[in-house]
Image (tube, rainbow, N blue to C red):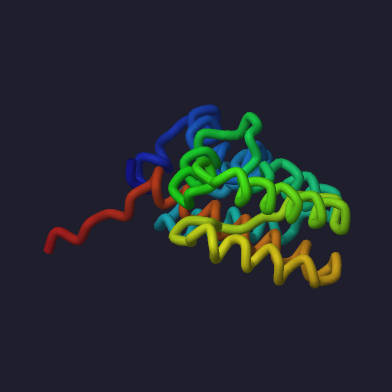
Length: 169
């Protein structure tokens, strides 16, 4: 689907197709839909990112908390399953899984929300290093970082769904 096709979707179709870009937070797509037409994938993403940036603290925390813990063996969206699988998080050794579980627990205890990282293109070693480093942050810095990571994740997902038009000249 390209941006013109996105612009022609009904409101319900728009929300259905793009509602999962921000993990179980269809409110972002519901608000973005009202700003159509979009001139490009980037303009659509920019509006969605602006909507997230303008959200209140409660909405941002809910958005963060909608993400599954990395490596968790729980129910998650198709997007998250694919992303974590490609990063090798579904094939951890028992030792790696225990290490990640402990890191996730420590992070969750400190911040009261799951560790968020755009794992696309990252190795499990990079993921471990990132969580170990970010556990040292304060809550304000981590909320800001989590939102930045969520926007990266959303951008990857949006680009998977909506393709840029090819220049045929």
